[in-house]
Image (cartoon, rainbow, N blue to C red; front, side, top):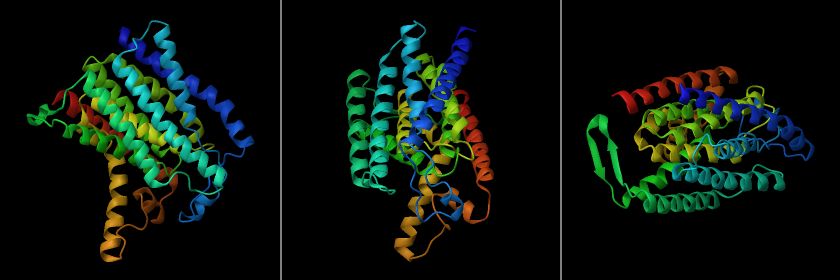
Length: 326
């Protein structure tokens, strides 16, 4: 009963803090003209979103950090190694996204950091995470108890971690193309990992996931269709990286591919499109990431988002079942 109370409190604290910050931040972003520049390649329906405030990831990043610190100082949560490293990854990836968003706005076009610059930053943080992980944990086994797999990857585990963090950071970033899509899918994924964390007695990780879920829910109050603010790279890069971090620290790396299957498929659709076009000079999808393909097919934006959310819920349930009960 105590952990249930903590979980509900965590979600509420995150949600209320995010709503309060959103109410103050969005008018400020409008006043200083921090409006999103829309790519010329998207459809006309997106052109009307030109000028919508971006960097909205701040709405759930700051409340999450402050809420965790409040719970720690109040004695309701211990500042563990896992919790500290999650917060560091969260802030550092958010900083890369913030730089990208800021430069894009400063230049007045949808071009911030280069792809290479973003990748270098993401890789450096992933390497830093692995170095700290090895110092305090040192477990390089890839375990899938369901399949009876327990392989010591050694230092190759560092490469695996790098691919996981950078890959999912960019996968969430690519998914962030429709109002509420990336935010809703992220909230679903973090709820799943919160429940898994509590089941394996990692309360610190679970509480963080609950707080972040509440904060994302608060953000969705402003980001659901029609969006009053976009999360930008500030939010999407941070969410993807911390999702991978949680999966690594709970030793549920493969489960991440089940729970985050929609994110994975969004990124995969881009890779397939690029590969096939270079090979055959033809496109498999009308446009990628794949949510834009459905737009080109004539589906309405809110319907696509709801369909993807439903797929995310199904994947989350399967992921919990895979990670806990099988």
